[in-house]
Image 1 (cartoon, rainbow, N blue to C red):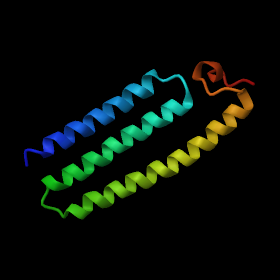
Image 2 (tube, rainbow, N blue to C red):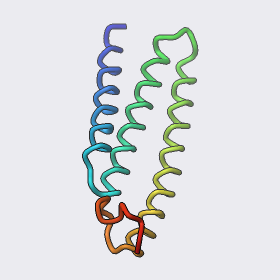
Image 3 (spheres, rainbow, N blue to C red):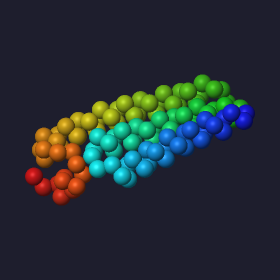
Image 4 (spheres, one colour):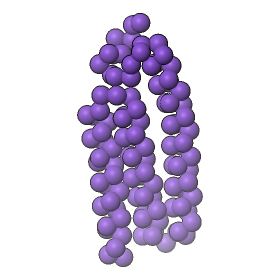
Length: 102
């Protein structure tokens, strides 16, 4: 049981690094990577939490698979949006496209 604390600490660090990346990154691709990092931290926390409950371990793994599927779908859509924004504005920097005028 004591080793589960380390998994939750690693999940918290992943989530915190992702949150830091979202607030400090200036490009859309960097922000996408930060969101993926946050989702990986949430998935790790789900798997670790399933060991603490009387439920089956498979439930946490299924929940993590759903989070991974959500992350893949989100990455596909966001990369398509980034491609369109970069074609229209010529850049993916947030400061340059903040006005949304082309």
